[in-house]
Amino acid sequence: MASTFKNLSPNDKISTKTLLHEAIPITGTIVSGTYADNNIKDYSHGMFQSVYDYPYLSSSANHIFDVTVGMANASALSASSPPAVAQQTKKINLYNQMAQVLVGYDRTGSIQQFDEDGDLSTGDKLNECIFLSFSRLLVKDEIKKGSFNLELGVNSDYTDPFSKRIKIIDESADTSFKVNSPVGEYGILVAASTAGTNLTNNTGSLANGVKCGLIFYQAGVAILSGSVFDAAGQAASTALTCADGTDNTPAKTPTEKDYIILISRDGTKRVYVHVDSASAGAVATGTVMTSASDTGAGTLGATIAALGTCIAVNNNLSTHNQATILNEIRLAILDPNGHTAAKFTLGNSLTPAGGVQSISITQNSATSTHHLGNTVVTEAITAAEITIANFSGGGSGNGILSSSVGAPQMTSDSYANSFQSLLTGSSISGSADALRHRIYNLQFNNTVELNSSIYFCRINHNEYNYSANPTYLSSSQIRVKSQASDSPVSYVTTVGLYSADNQILAVGKLSEPLRKDPTIEYTLRARLDY
Image (tube, rainbow, N blue to C red; front, top):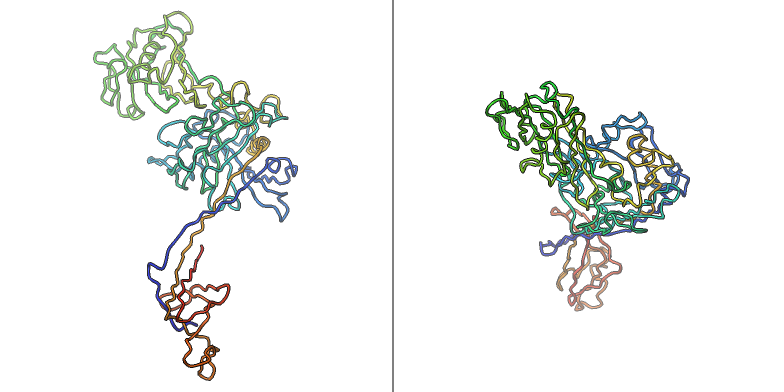
């Protein structure tokens, strides 16, 4: 027990942080093949699948990662009517669960969707996702930024998946990661070809490449967009259709304050509201409306005004035929206050004619993106003769892979073998099996954050020259002195760090004793890691 203590000043202490990294390689043969799937564990709840590095019944097995899939309520696939085996509700719940944890809620209390470029307010959303949740045993404190590399086979032939490959990387993540997540930092995943020229854009750069997912570093979760297993194709489109272009029967045309809501690929929403010019005062086509705006016989009202930016579509609803009404909707969409031609490409205006007539509406899309606008169209038109469907055609067949590669066969089935078919017609485990079949290689570096407190224990020339060890004295004489005039000598073997009330907190042992006498000064460095 020490009897003499020396206080440490603030200048005698420093705190440091060191990041230690370990390479984690996971070959595709471990994920699928080496152990004939005996290292793959499915559960009765069917919510996810676990992958081990050895048959999971063995005590030597280590958990590597979990895999599952999900889709947003906003996904075009969620509106389908799949069989019970497809677990549609579970897939939607899984997406929402992951989103609320990793992305959080907006100020209205709604769960935010995963965003392709991390800008949660606007931009393309990841509606169909594959989730890889890595074991903490591998991730440690976090995945090192810029080290993630997942190589996938994208050849169309199911029996030969790896002759064409792409890699998914978090390029430039060490300097361009995002921080607007409740669980810490995350990066944007981009794709590049590794065997063959397989992408619509092969740059593989964060600035110009094909974005295809997110990676949350501290959470140890990678999210892949379903587009990585889909080929490029046509943009999403719909059509305004009337049953008879020359028919002007009021019962077969819209009524005042009927509306349609269109949402463009970038999220711009407009509510196109019919106003009746048969009554004086109705606002002109293209006018941005408020709740007090004149719609003919009445005003817009707060309920419709709350739906979004309302744009007037002015027609004489008593005399105009169906084709003329469609032409006026077209003008409203192209108006500077509407979506404009920058958002939608519209077909030519109609010359009224008997029979069905339509005006096409196609989402405009940038060449560097794969989301082509399968947005929901809200139609509130009482006349059944004028219709418009949801945007479609931008889902299956429209991905990051080039059209020359084609959408890969995700299963051995000759027909229902696309990733979209899996989401709408297969179990979560079936989707996980299909993904594992396509993993060629996976690697990243983990990170261990080592925090240290370093104490500099300074011994001046006139300090600690005597030992507190009882054996230091013999008959009241210092054992290490031959004559009374000799300088005192001691040997330092241990450093103790004490609290303010002299309670021992930490002990450090020297590798060998240090001789100490009045001619020697020391600075001993004690480091505490945690």
